[in-house]
Amino acid sequence: MFRAIVIEKHDDSTSASVASVDEKDLPAGEVVVDIDYSTLNYKDALAITGQAPVVRHFPMVAGIDFAGTVAASDSDRFKPGAKVVLNGWGVGESHWGGLAQKARVKADWLIPLPDALSTFDAMACGTAGYTAMLCVQALEAQGVTPDDGEIVVTGASGGVGSVAVFLLANRGYRVVAVTGRMQEADYLRSLGATEVLDRSAFSEKGRPLARERWAGAVDVAGSHTLANVCASTKYLGTVTCCGLAQGMDFPASVAPFILRGVKLIGIDSVNCPAAIREKAWAALASEWTPDLLKSVTNTTTLDETVEAAERLLNGEIRGRLVIDVN
Ligand code: NDP
Image (cartoon, rainbow, N blue to C red):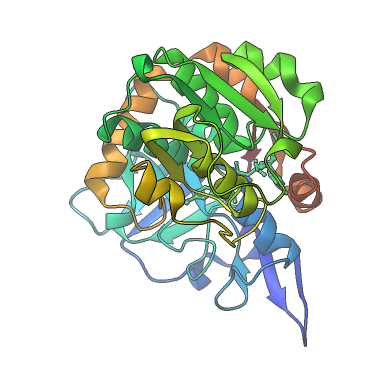
């Protein structure tokens, strides 16, 4: 038996709690992993609280990511004892997930943990850090360089936002952090932001085109925030879009795209091909520092996770929350 956060369906609601699960009930897969750490992501919080239909069938073990050690394997690629990390692939949505002491998954979903990272480090980065890196690499693939000007990061105090601020600043970009928590301005400056702006300036309907300011953007908010970011992006600038913390809608006009050649690049971490994932993890392994770890990460237990999910959706958790499942 092992412990896990199990989400169950009732007539027209769901509930989540820590439960004891039989290993023989694990879903099919070639590799069994003893999990060391998972994390609490925005999507996990939606699934645990039932605030959005993230879970495809019930009962579901929550958790879209984990890092741990291979316990048993029918795959030539992963031997028992190997350290691995997993992000996405529907784990925690349609396949039992990582907020548990064990998982059984397809070998193709696993990435060998880069040598420079421990399983704790990997989950301190988590899906949020890996997604932040996908955004940074997408900006650079579009040719955005530090000389082009400022990069704006929305939802900057959250998981993706905090890591994006650090990674961009570390690569020499001038980063403007947008947050609803101005009390976190010192924290954001400590990660490398050169300026911190209140998100209220972005969250209402704005003009189709505004003064050109951003060479690039990492947006986790969607909705009016994303529309306003696009409207104020410079000629031929690039906006990466990865989240919906404000909303799934995109109430924008085509003006920035057809008059300024602004590029809007979608970022998906869930079904991202292995080669792109491995490139992102390799870069995280070389750019992630113990100092960042300390300032961005808090750790809690499986027993505290359900309550933490509510706090995350209320915007009360700063940076990354690692879950020690043991
Ligand atoms: P967090 O909850 O850690 O961070 C989200 C942040 O968004 C909050 O901390 C807050 O930052 C900001 N925010 C909250 N509400 C609003 C609002 N109404 N308007 C504007 N900003 C708001 O979540 P994550 O960092 O884990 O994820 C961020 C987003 O990215 C989520 O929507 C998530 O689903 C998505 N995501 C997508 C992935 C992909 O593959 N595309 C992968 C990972 C995440 P502040 O207080 O600083 O304003």
